[in-house]
Image 1 (spheres, rainbow, N blue to C red):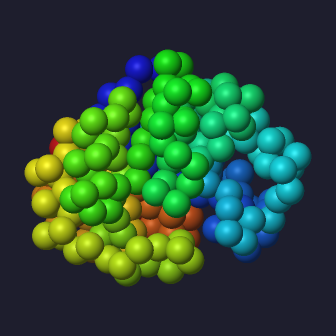
Image 2 (cartoon, rainbow, N blue to C red):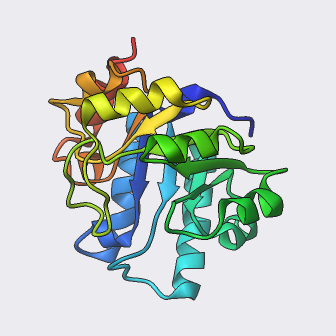
Length: 213
């Protein structure tokens, strides 16, 4: 699958740590797929409910669903798992394994996203063979226990200006502030609780998607 910036518009990130019960995960994710998310990243860490074998099973189920709905499928950090299930891409964080290792291993056959939350990180990423950058948290967030301090809208806009790659924003984004985030020039919005904890997933996804029209 060839990367297109439009893939980033409504980018769902989720793992089993984001649901109260394991059996809720796939139904919620599939509801988001039906509603029109444009990309999905399986990020199963922190308070994950799975061991490594169970994670492989879940990744295969997610691969099947993303194929069914023609949604790009990314896996967080674990490029061996991504390769095993034939994911479309890998997303690498600053605190994960070395980005150069991932590019060398799978860059020729997978899309690669890279978390960059400072101007220095953006300038380094500009020299790498990647596809997009994830930046944030824009606002304070409880979805990631290891989240960096919030960069705010002005900080995000500065990263957009400096980056050679399209940026997808993450962290503390809600339906109420999403339009302001989009106006910074980002290519898209990624969310965990924004979608996973929404009481009306279809309406949430539709509202975010409509902001690009």
